Amino acid sequence: MAKKAITSHSKPKPKSRAVKTAKPAKVLKAGVAGSQPGKPKAFKPVKFKPWTESEVVEAFTRFRKANPEPKGELEHLNPYTLLVAVALSAQATDVGVNKATRHLFPVADTPEKMVELGEEKLRDYIKTIGLYRTKARNVIALSEQLIVLYGSEVPRDRAALEALPGVGRKTANVVLNIAFGEPTIAVDTHLFRVGNRTGLAPGKTPLEVELGLLEIVPPQFARHAHHWLILHGRYTCVARKPRCEVCIINDLCRWPEKTV
Image (cartoon, rainbow, N blue to C red; front, side):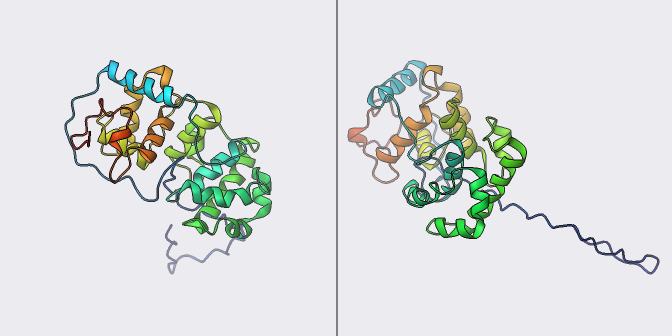
């Protein structure tokens, strides 16, 4: 806020000695399990024939048969360390985050321990991760807020999670899904690509893809849907040279450039 100008008719007030409150670092668009650095690549708008309800059920039935209990690949010990791991994964790979947190979490697996560790020492643990200075600042700030506002517990509420420093909708969805079993869908660069390329849930933004999937995914598949689609995008429907020959939904996919 701009300082009030001092006129000839006013006297400057004595400076307050109030302690300055550190400003939380900017919110980073955090990745989810399996995300890659950078923003989701834009797709050219293509008009696909919408998937039928039976096709959607068939696709997720195949995913479930191939992988009944899919898991996120970010390593964590509890809801708090999951929250930290996802926040650290912004514009980074899960592999890189896991390498750092394998040393960090044994010494700081609660908000209190993280605050006691401090921002400077935290930076030493995560300096191999991109944007580590901003992330360290966010992790300390969110840990302090968890202690003060929620008794050191991770809230089971999207709005409360998104209000924490460095936490956005994607991170909140991951925590709600993995830590609390909520049927949320976290759209990372892989899932964004799969939703658009296959025509399952095309959208110009991650939110559009998320809302599209929430509309069509049957309840019995909702909890694991985003894991299946993320893993499918990471290992099969990859950005370059998608492996259509081993894709278990290649006959349902609407992509006109399929290799099979």
